[in-house]
Image 1 (spheres, rainbow, N blue to C red):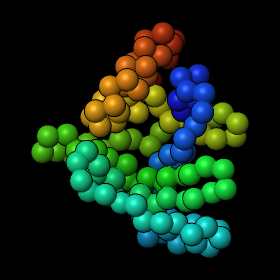
Image 2 (tube, helix red, strand yellow):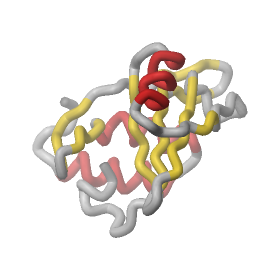
Image 3 (tube, rainbow, N blue to C red):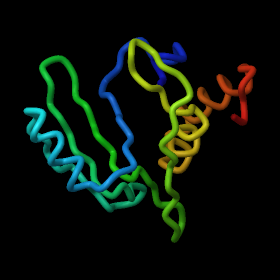
Length: 125
């Protein structure tokens, strides 16, 4: 999503958010020939139900099942909703990631997304 918006030139890893049963997602990845590594962490700010990492030849892909973050004493779920397609990939709503980055303390990314949303004609969708 950051690359789609032109906010980064190099993608370090790809985050795929999924709203499904975590065991079913893991089994589907195994059937597809992947060897997902469970990198789930419940240490704040992370509250995602399962983080499955795929080490691919030229990049890393994180499958975030039930993407959520801790804020104070609450768990804040981050919605899974695509707003566009780029290079054949569904792209998450920048506002959802702005929220996640803000809660995770990644102020630079949150600010860049806030600015991109403010300059767009589809803010609030």
